Length: 219
Image (cartoon, rainbow, N blue to C red; front, top):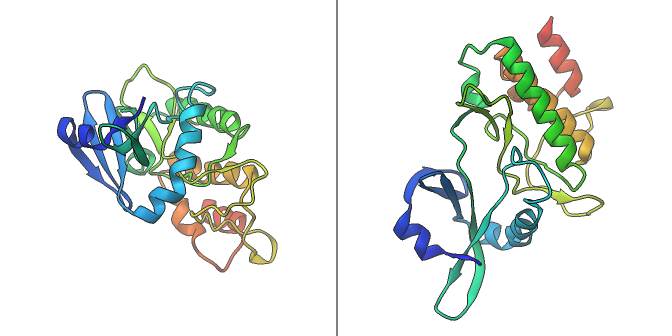
């Protein structure tokens, strides 16, 4: 059963605005409503696929539990967004300024790589970054969480992923998007988490292979 867009706007409060969506919150649920029509139309099948996938993967991979649609009394119209659990947490970006025990970081990172291995059985995430990886506020929770899997592509698909990891290999050529680039990007994001240094910004430099940039700044 779909959730009408009007229901979300009437019953949940605005929580946050992103580049292409407005987030609403009610109790322990988060509602993501897309603002750009062209994005909304292109992403509708992906959102429906993620909704179907939610029962096949671990809850640390935060996927839609319901789909938000523009509706009237008789029909469901286009996908407007989705509902997902709200995770009380800090983004990895915010964690760059926090003092977190190394043992705790290791547990979080290990769980994220297990989650990535799991989701990569179904799709290429394509949008792993410091804002989409979460560190839980619950001190007893040792799992990291992945959110915003809106830019994925299915395995063996020819669609073009919108996000740009800018991961460069030999001769500074940008690598193709596949599960390997997901793994490399997870490595870059978790390395930033460990060292409290934003390696993602360095990778945007176009002049050098990705590994060269990272090794140069770890010395």
